[in-house]
Length: 241
Ligand code: GLN
Image 1: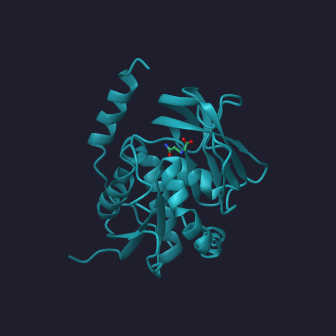
Image 2: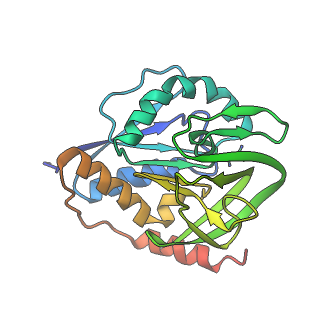
């Protein structure tokens, strides 16, 4: 079957950074890329692997502090390449643990400093408070974003990024400013698991659109089937907390 072309999606560190169903984000991208008429290719990058060439979209998940410690040296070795891709407007989605490490640093609850790669102007401090529960975010770009958070790190945004949105339920980045996630170039960073993309197809399509535009000069949308996304959003909306 002829398609509009191939889009290569790379998942960063799925072995160590992939909790609360974050793998679902890669699966949604795969499915929606093919619904839009393109051919998806799913790739994985784990510690010590050779970094694949010609990547069109990057997605990375959350992880325990221990997972973040496992990947930190390898991530530093990849920092320059990832920064160059980010500055060249490659679309990326980074969730929770990788959101923190795309920032300047994550100082854990026990005082250990895990350096980040500084693509995002954010910093994160571990606390004794664990922020857990369903989250509803008002985003001017993506409408109402729904997800689930579970983190002890609290992130503050510098002037180089904008928040993904404002929390209408749940906590998001930190217990102080009512912001959730971060936006920079074509990067979407968020604390939300659930996973995020099955319930928020607008974010998936944003990433796919920018991947296609970068590679082919334009994006020709297809007809994605949103039946399950609608059901998942309805179901999430009924949850009491
Ligand atoms: N270890 C980090 C924290 O607790 C990230 C957790 C996560 O990815 N869910 O803040």
